[in-house]
Image (cartoon, rainbow, N blue to C red; front, side, top):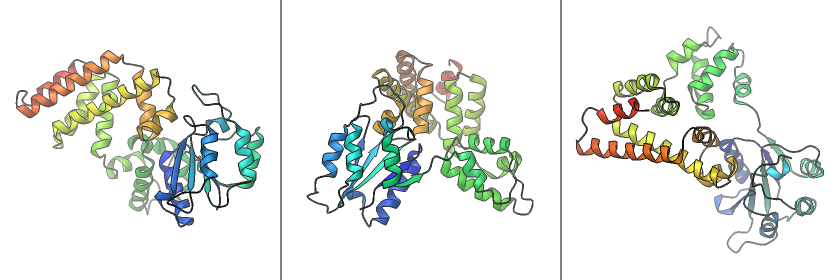
Length: 311
């Protein structure tokens, strides 16, 4: 069985690469065993790798959040016995496969050289800007326009690359993609607009909040859906804030909540602008608004209008 090193900071890309590896090995999700190395010691992983499964012939063990290999000193990062991993790399179990996931490696470490020699390295630490540039294929798109597309689609890498293909088809003759083209061709979905609304609410920008909110309503979006989505975001920020106060770092929070790292990053940034009491108050207000709309107590979205005015 082959062993792999995935260098990436994008959980979507990481999961895609793991699926590809499973396919190459003719294995399924049932063969997969995952460990977060900010919560588990290497001894546990080595024990798993060196034992045989009762229900599966081959195991694929994935070590996520291997910060100890990066050289960074992060809060609450577990101190790992790297010699255990070095010995395993030299003498791996031929029945099982190990996948190490790390954002970057410390080139000064002895184990880094060993990993690059013995493991199949998949380096996916390429910025979305470079991904766009690499896929332009003869089209012109300046840096300002590239950044506009990224922000317009809220750093959603999958949608960005899909929409880029549409833009290339649209501008096949001219070979130049502009901001006007993005505004004309790339339609914002509900999630994009709600993201903008939430962003303005978090900044307490009443004017911009109302602009996006009115746009959503004019398009026929359900007020209840808007309220619930905004409440979900505040709930996420509250959860993240609690975990930060408990000493958890971004990678651990991402793993625990099972959501995209970019959402965690934004929630972490937003959490510093609110106290726990603020967040609880907002959640209570949004809950009351939802109930009042559903029971007919508050007509014409008046409750949410007041919520925005009182930011």
